[in-house]
Image (cartoon, rainbow over all chains, first blue to last red):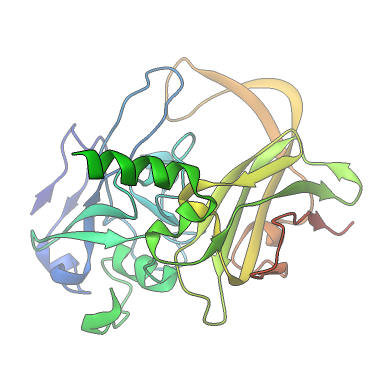
Length: 131
Length: 139
């Protein structure tokens, strides 16, 4: 059970069985740099809320729920208004998958692959070397 | 240590520093218009298509202008452009995500489809590009 608590802000209960795309190919948490003009703080956000393409316009995100935003790619500098996948590492960003493994994903990742990794039940197939 | 410092300053001074992510890219900039009307605010998303490598790039539209600078700009190749251009209504509305905060109310300029994955706008970024590309939603 992934019990999302206040650190990730949105309340949700998702069981391992709900991650039908596979826990090793579903993003759960990513680094982000959100340049909030009021608080100027860095935050972490979580994904795994998106079931399919219909519920997640512009790639995969529910912006109002402060979940992860992969629609803008990696390190696109959009953090001022969107909690995108952002880091201060040159060229890469750390992400955590639902099976617990961490990956240092590059900015060169294919956008379609990135969005596919974000859904937990999109029923897409990703080859092992896709990212 | 001396080598480290040298490498860093070399990067800052080199225009091609944006290639650090591994893809040749161009810093893009220009105007965003709905017909002849300037987009007051909003955002643009460049999504690589037709085999163009790399992930998407999003930038804010500020006073009718945009500039993609992060990670060296937009990768060379073809991209779909999704434009969420907005104009202010002059009213203030509450921000749903944060209680007690008021923001400028805006309305979208132009048809909704230009703001999403169905957008018919595409651009081609070339090696020779000077980086200036105006984005125009036809009226």
